[in-house]
Length: 297
Image 1: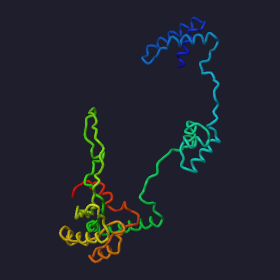
Image 2 (image 1 turned 30 degrees about the vertical axis):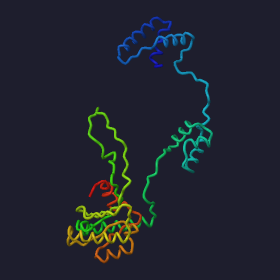
Image 3 (image 1 turned 90 degrees about the vertical axis):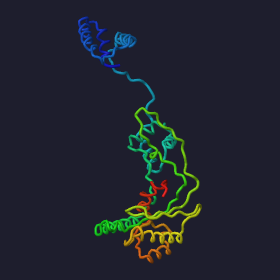
């Protein structure tokens, strides 16, 4: 109960009439405030009886109850040890210590822990891989500083991907403009078609150059890839004449095969160095196939 309410009850039960009248006047002024909330009749009767019995304190009296036996320093230490040793759940910790879940949550919070998910990456790079990646990217940046945009315009990149005959819209692609109180749309969930074909796409800083699609249920190997490179050379002669081509592809097995490297050297091209286990540095992986897999070429 709020203190001013209890003071009102104390004043009304006071034997001094003058004090009762003074307090009533001050309470009338308070009641003019819109935020003032009157005490219920049952609460008034209960507190009048409380003060007439000689109890003048308005604080809560201590009550008997079950003592805190779970959230102890020893249990906190054991919780800390269990969390550091293994990836465990609150239920596992509670069963190991024989205490309740709420106590475990309280101790975990006091220890400053919070449960987070690990960030998934394509590959955990070793120190050698990191050093190789840094060296190659530094070399490419140095070439760009010296040659400028001419260096970028010589780069032709490409990669392979599966293309479904039907690709459903993503949730973001299906977003529509609505008024604040417009009813939300409902759409049935769809999945990509079972029929798909393997496609290889080549492009550069100025746009699309060549796309080749295999027959259904066929995959690509080094020999087929070399055939596509010769088709790419013909397309470049028409669309990008007179350029010194630098081919950029990841170090997939068919890209790094001896047959592929010999064909690139025979055509007078140069292969841009690509660090191991770094698919994120291949432009097609995040610039092209992320948005063009559902586009018809």
